[in-house]
Image (cartoon, rainbow, N blue to C red):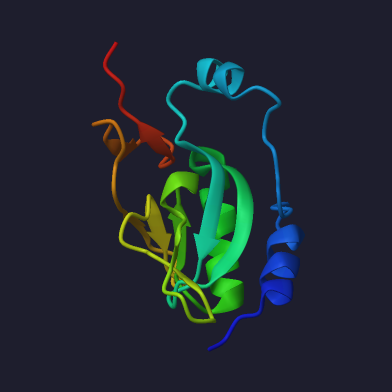
Amino acid sequence: MTIDNERAAAAAAKLGLHHGRMISASKSWYRRAYPENVVVFNAALADVDGRDLWRGDLDLTVDETKLIALAAELGTTVHVLYESDARLIGREEPYRLDLAPAVVRVTPGGETILGEIRWGVPLTRNAAGQLVSVRSE
């Protein structure tokens, strides 16, 4: 199924995920305020074909349910990529994103698949079932 950017942007906005979303004016303050949260600043969302659907800040601890709803609405697995990994591959249009380094993948059926973990910080779930990072101080 081909998903155009307008449809993806409208579905994301309906869930409070406006394109270019900023969750804080200060990344360092946000990380200090929510040290266990799994935060991906300047994230890119892509569909199963690597099409770039959305860009903005995500707090996966808080936003996972929104991503599940988005995947269901669009009928595709949504891949969450760090900004530095959201590089276009190929030289021919339509351009695609490399999905291999996805932080998480969220299926239309509601499953969250953990992907590449950065800086040796594993992801797990807290007692409430939310994604959290396990940081050793």
